[in-house]
Image (cartoon, rainbow, N blue to C red; front, side, top):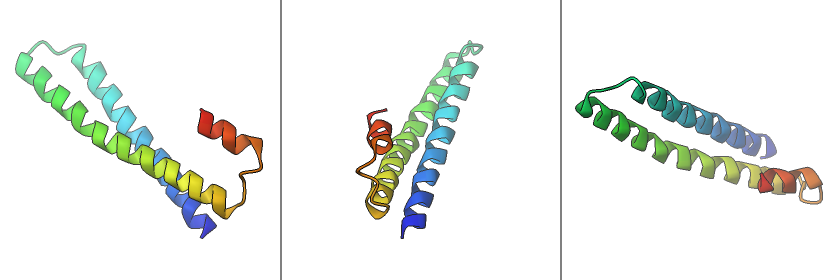
Length: 85
């Protein structure tokens, strides 16, 4: 099961980066936009990406914790440091 937990962890990290990148792209587009309706649409789009961002954080943490238990890594300092970060 360990490889599947690691895959889940990596998939969560990839989803987090995609959702975060989407929010940054909207932010950069907002700087040039002057139309109020389009600004509202962009802000709604950015808010919708937050759901994916938070879901991917949950998947990232769950996969990491499960892989930590499956690999018996809890006695190592690096896993605690990664959780703290």
